[in-house]
Length: 391
Image (cartoon, rainbow, N blue to C red; front, side, top):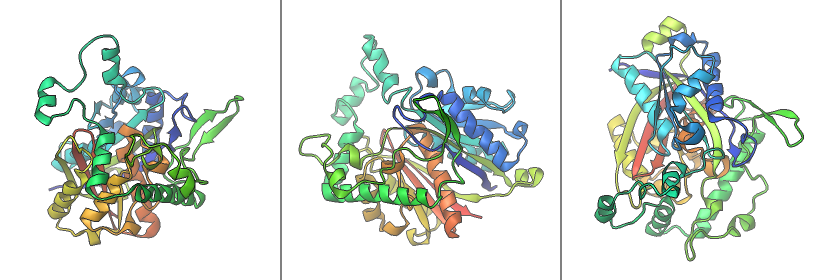
């Protein structure tokens, strides 16, 4: 089978809800990433055969095909097509896997995989709550689904609590993990670890002064065990708080995926080779635990052991998720989310997949390491796993 390579990877710095990126239309924010991929790779933009864009909140400014609108807002020619996809939090990781499959099948040679989410301008849940506010429908889960699984609503918050209880993860452990995420992210920022991956965006402050947004806004460099522990529980008697869960975030990200033929034809330099693409489905109630069997399947299909993977990015949707993954996979905590994760850096839903890819590839390069694994828990009990070889 043909190989698929990544030749450019970029992301915006995360913006807090109502923060630095609140005035950026998501189509324009995504367009900046598309332009950056072209600039960083040096490819002729007319050679791009498709743009696959992940986005979860496809309503308001992200409705009416945000992928195509991002192309129209960019410097890419209008001849470049696009498609918008939703695999919940794994949307842009799935975009990457679709792009790789297109290249590996030989049907396309140059494909952008990307994602965008403005959680400020399109609040989480808006696509399904808006019709209900107007008295239309009863929501996405039909009575048939509710009766089959014995729940009226699938909740990621409930799933996170279930994982913590199942795997014996005390609140103290969750809070300690959250604090470590902030400390690692603060250290990485201070050392310039994110500089090469971030696409600067022009922003205005409250007094109308322009600057470039180049630092992830959610990092709490001054976080302490006491400040993390003091945050109110989301459920009385539970273990999950806003402090040990991912932050609402605005952002965009993307990678450029090409074939070996395109490497030669366009004189491109590969950053990484895609080793394995895996997606699985499991229990939609506990929901966020599927990354564990998905990782086992991915390693098995790649003929690898977890010890052979140098770095892993496991999305920090909630602290119990990566902690349960570490326990069940037998992975090395020192290789996990080495520059912090979504608890500190934010989780811009549809953009998080290729955001993690971008950070993982740059971290591998900075450390001179070879293999990286990325996995994302997703609504509906789904999980994506992608394994990369840095070149």
